[in-house]
Image 1 (cartoon, rainbow, N blue to C red):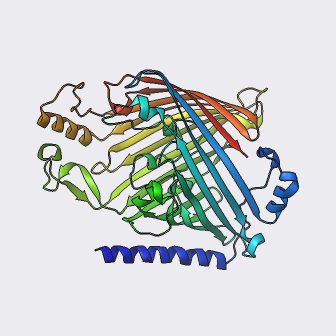
Image 2: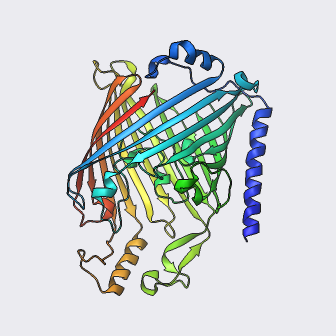
Image 3: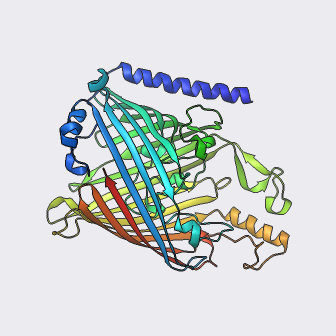
Length: 451
């Protein structure tokens, strides 16, 4: 079995390598590297050097995100304090036609570093079960340095076919969503937060993504991502070998980007298949309730699920297309046999340029629900019954988890083109999905800057 797994992994890496080479061998449409604007960077144009490098095909970046969260009220531990988490992202994007003469190809490299602590872990959740989300989205996946992006992209047939191969995360392309909020339930691809075989930024894995533009408004894409839990380990942030791989995750998505009454929108419908075996959340290997027998969990051969992402601008302010009100929603549904969270729902709105005197500021409001699989609840009840414990305050009691609700409102102050500060308030009902834990109020500040 191990030989077969290694053989499959080697085939996967060979396919990825051949895809990179083929992407460099043919021509397509113009590169998608964005124009350089010196005023979007704290350090400016470096006396003209940055523009010169950009003209030669090199676009260097250094970005920073810092997030503070303080437990103003409630939570499992109401001892008030504050926690700070942050992330540096250093990278370069290269126009390979300018650099190496390979037409219409791009290369991107990004290295990240995360550090700090999370108020959700320290104060909000019952330590016996934790929380289901995070009030500081930038915390997580190990506070360490990582290779986050290292890929080549090529387009063909006047831009209709787009192929990307290398090291990357699923959320770069699938279920993509902005990350202006500080609460994790409103930031990035949501499917990754509740599927343990789907890794989002800053973790990367070997992968191949193929996209085809059906019309100017519609495209479809499919990806194959190595599923390797060893990449999560703190000491493996730059691991390149595929040792430890368990299988693959295959996402498929259709994206529609219409313009309705001259207002832009984006709608995503996706499905994922995860090949690594997964434990059933309720049954043992004999099909009996594991909470009662204490036996080995039944092994399932796969995980599946789907997602929907919708974003639509519904009005402009003052006739300015850069200002206006947009609505958004995310929903995910997961395998009830194997997934701790079986569904997630989130809705909200963003006001861009809410005031004429502050045309680049923004206001965001969002509400989300994370629903715990009922089989997980039933198993916890069975364990408590077997142990003869029904008192929540007993250290041996296993809390019953139902649904956690998160909400956030922020005001984004556009200080300069390279610095935005977003003070926010978050309200978390039933942290960890545990009704006995007091609802929590968190005050936060999110800082985003480009050097």
